[in-house]
Amino acid sequence: MAGVTNVAFRTLCRELEEAKVGTVSGLYVCEMVTARALVERHPVTMHMTTFAPQESPRSLQLYTVDPATTYEAAKMVVEENLADHIDMNFGCPVPKVTRRGGGAALPYKRRLFGQIVAAAVRATEGTSVPVTVKFRIGVDDAHRTHLDAGRIAEQEGAAAVALHARTAAQRYSGTADWDEIGKLKEAVTSIPVLGNGDIFEANDALAMMAATGCDGVVIGRGCLGRPWLFAELSAAFTGSPAPTPPTLGEVADIMRRHGGLLAEHFGEDKGMRDMRKHIAWYLHGFPAGADLRRALALVKTLDELDGLLDQLDPEVPFPAAATGPRGRQGSAASVSLPEGWLDDPDDCTVPEGAEIMGSGG
Image (cartoon, rainbow, N blue to C red; front, side, top):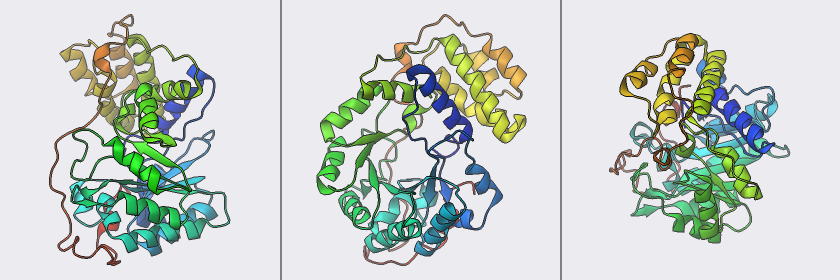
């Protein structure tokens, strides 16, 4: 969720959950940052780790390929009180990451993967900062690693594991294989197992948990343009009445708040440029008109955003067309990997150059 789950979006999600169900129970994770850039205090990375004053627990998502750098980054998080939780992401399927051995490619190297998880756990040992680990089913159907990865993370002291039930080759296409989440739950018995993939509404989360026995869910693309999804999930998990889906007028107010929060975080110019990508997600399924959509996609100021949103019909109810898959889907493709990457799963050589490919930092 790079470029999405910054402090502005997380604040919005938390506000909506509290407003609709009276509490905040979700764990909102920051966008992925690179361990090396964090240790080197890259200004962009440090800005990406911004948390709101009232945000608790603070959850930092870490991309990493090197045990030594992982240890230094996790130690820095603890010693400088940068976050209350570290979530290690080994699920990124982007070619520029996997071709260097990072992201979803890395768990194939079982020993290296174990060394990285162990380094983070060692750096946080004796503290209240848990380390969790997220990964995919594997590189492709011929190279599945999730059961090994789950057992290794469990043995090395991870507090929980999460599985995006797709291979790297699938990227975001097709259907998540929830059966594999169930298999991981059977293989990993002493820590929670979380499921991820194709959760676009609260009933999807309940269905996943019923089908797999997993202990909780991780939301990614399902919240794009739907920051109120977490309120719906909170209500479903507690048996509370489901919040009423927002009208187009209420969505417009949410967009105004999102734009304001982005302007606070980035400044108005960059904040509005960042807001543009959210427009299509928010208006998905709603009648808005091509001209208004184009104008919103080029918005430059908060005043302009406000004026354009005033042109939407506030009485339009939430449409059925706005449900279902969100964000990019694309198609399956061969995974770009370093030459000889699949030759030896026990090779623990640190991938060259992969540390700089994981985040804006």
